[in-house]
Image (cartoon, rainbow, N blue to C red; front, side, top):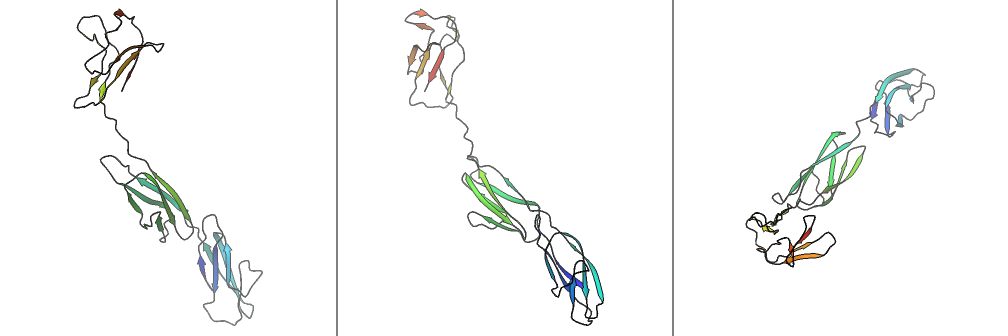
Length: 226
């Protein structure tokens, strides 16, 4: 007697054993997995993974047996590796890797219809990926973030100045970055209670620490620039 075995699937009971008589004896034949209850049907399905004994009984009541093991394959595991979009790198590659569960029947399906393990994208968004094998299917939403925008510094604004007329740091003003061309500019200075003390649209003009000729006390002031 021999057996044809169908593997089980993870977390399922889909294993099967089919008995086969390889040496002619007297028919009819009956089959059993417990050696007690026999049936004319050689197929036993809905089985979990594990060890079994298949019994075959011929028309004379003689019994033969064979040991059978239903294996359970590794669970399907999906990992997606991805690089990032950048201003100097307009495309990113999404690559599916299968650390476990590659039984030789893997199928890939991306949202755009592509069927390979990797996908090149040129825009931020969410990309759907489905991976399946004989037993399992995994659906993954892969998020590609927008490229980070590196801010361009247009102005330098100091955090302190000393209006003591010594010729050093006497004015509070913003300095344009090298090569920056400003079409519009406005600088405003307020005290801690929100009263405006100074306003200018001239890059070369700065606050000298006075209001209507009166020197202001040292302290915390708020500035606004646009």
